[in-house]
Length: 237
Length: 79
Image (cartoon, rainbow over all chains, first blue to last red; front, side, top):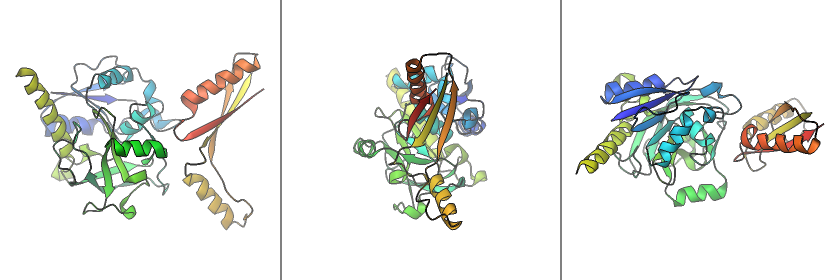
């Protein structure tokens, strides 16, 4: 399978995502420049972390106007799997491909540390290899990861099981002291209604090798590789 | 014509920056500053002489780009 990793001016986790896909998971991977107008045969698209277009105006606000976002949106509408990591999540929110918005962290501080995440939903192509309730230890690095949705939207996200990961303590218990940014309902990741587009603030690509302090991010990559193999097997049979 | 666009967080959305500024002012003795909300200010230079058109245009770009309607509201002034 082929990963398409979008590079915006200001992306800085694109090489980490590429490394995880290519070197750790031995998959085909290709960079997609933000001015590209096709996805070069990508089976899965990753919008990586960073500061796309300098995060001018609001985080992710300018990136939605990049030419590549047209094909990314069309790919998602056809059911193609799209993962937004950190700034990529912020871009998906600004592009209207995921609901809600990000606010400054309630501490007003940039937080760069490992967090604990409880897997809430395994019915997405990026979490299907995980167990519901499993706790993953993955790093974050952001100043604006304080997820906000108005009350009616928040209720519908919960009702439709669109909250994919939540910040918890190491035992998987909800505790405000372990919520690093003030996100409503401790939300760390959500998916769209059709479940093929996922946005997450933590960085799974930074947690795929023991050398860098943990391998829990592999769950996300194992999931998508497994999901695409299932699709390929289904197509052949 | 010039248009001025003021973007602020909606009243229902917590503004940690405004709160921090208010706390700082209180610590300086400005207790009568009851609350602070921080926002953004844009000046648009519009190639039109019609007030109605200028207002409509400024509101359109504010809604589409300058403000995020999920968390922010905006106000337009034209002269």
